Image (tube, rainbow, N blue to C red; front, side):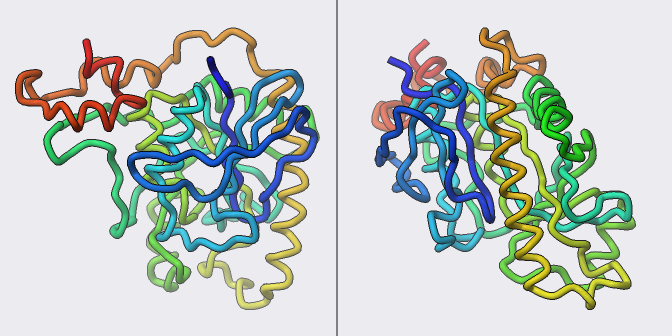
Length: 291
């Protein structure tokens, strides 16, 4: 029985999801360890939802400490078909101002200390990732932004850095010069793992500040950023509620094939696959490993 159809991953400032009914908490054990926190399960606008605070309630986990594999694996175990990711970011473009929401359609992965796949150690798979964002979910995000009066801008590139330190000025100027839109620390390898798990994925990047390239960056205080972050979180709650209300009730095939990503990804010959590893990966890849 499907426990949830929509997964919501709350980023900095978004540690709870008000408006849920029939609420219960559930801790999920995965072969890759524990997720960031217990999942909050319930119904939002009649939709079965699983909410996870990415950094744990109280913001206890650094971006590099997040168990991305456990978070996405648990979503799959709960039956989630679409992930709505919410993240706080810095802006790399003058037109993306604090309190704006950006819905990127591309990612640049600059992380280096994270495991970004469920596969390996005996079973090899290479999923396509040219179009990393599900257009259906991204379009729904954009529509929901309009519905709640939030400035939502669809398109652009999210560059994901390792952190926890912010960029140097040279790094920030380089990313800006390359035309990237926003910078954050959490959407990679989250989006890659969602694709391996055949879950449709999109993110709304909530701008809290301009990155250090901006000449007025030094005038921004931590208190200013926190205020914007909390204001953004309130907007995000309304956005997600609107999205749950408007989202298509029927799950149509993903336009970029996210929900069938493993069809042509496996390389390891069936007779060479470790049976124990097949069991371990059952929730995310059992459909193709057992076929």
